Length: 453
Image (cartoon, rainbow, N blue to C red):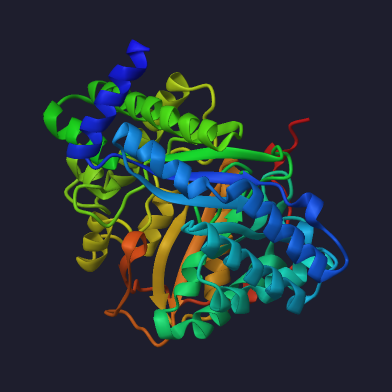
């Protein structure tokens, strides 16, 4: 097919010169048929099913990499929220499941397995509560298992009890993984309006309305967009928007092409292409640099939120034109530790937590890979999560918090994980207390816009 061949050639150029890569090919596997009251039977079923579908996932993805000359940075698996599979179990049994997931991920050779998760936006079952209580130990025991908890939605409102519990879980996880800069917290995401087909970790899970197995792809091309903006010179806003859309259109086409080839090789259905621009710690592969190229002096300057809104909107419009299979979260990610320009802006005092919160109202997700002092109270973390959930509920969008209260660290220190997780400066947090507010517990009711029936 000539059109496909032209796309491949352009993809190779983007890959070699402009930091374009496929960020992840994530195989989603339903584990709903693995449930059993006997934990030994459940773990055996889980392991066997993951191996049956995923054993050649890495090998097949690498073959597509070689064939088309483009890097697939991560090969991952997502699973049914494990609280559903193990709803009859206690903490100890969930930990056995976590170890089983880690063993399967290690044998297959994937980077991460995600779905150690629960959906508790309106309340929890006994099993979901036990799953949440097990998270700190699970994150300490495993290397590849990632966890996410959905604590709010536009339809249900915001579960403050779940937020308070997760704030305590995050603090305990930081302490249990303190020998490695509290890295366990980097594997936990607290969501509002979580989506069922997200290929990105730590927040991925295989939703209950998803098929038996599917292949979702997450693309990444901040460097491509950055180069296009720099090459265009000083153009007006409409011209800038058209330029970004045309560039993202090409990225999306290339990403879907590779994703479909990996799905075909695995003999599983193709699901969605998530068109999120996801940065890496590499120079030139930064959302922050894009915002600077658009004209703000540094990330955090007045106009930063408007620039990010324009970028995010263009990404979505271009993706929808390029593919009929757009899903996931799809937009622009702003994880601090994974973006060199964001890191520099924090170091210079130009980017604060409060400005980041404003930016999350118009970007793809939320407060991502934010490192704060280890003595930050759990009530403050709960308040931060509640604020992000409020943005999600009122605007009917996905928001999330991945926060690291790094044990023993203070403002001026860093956490350093290397690889895609990068390096983050400890950000200052308001010393004002939200303890009485979140201490009320209960559930913030759903907004009027939830009544859409």
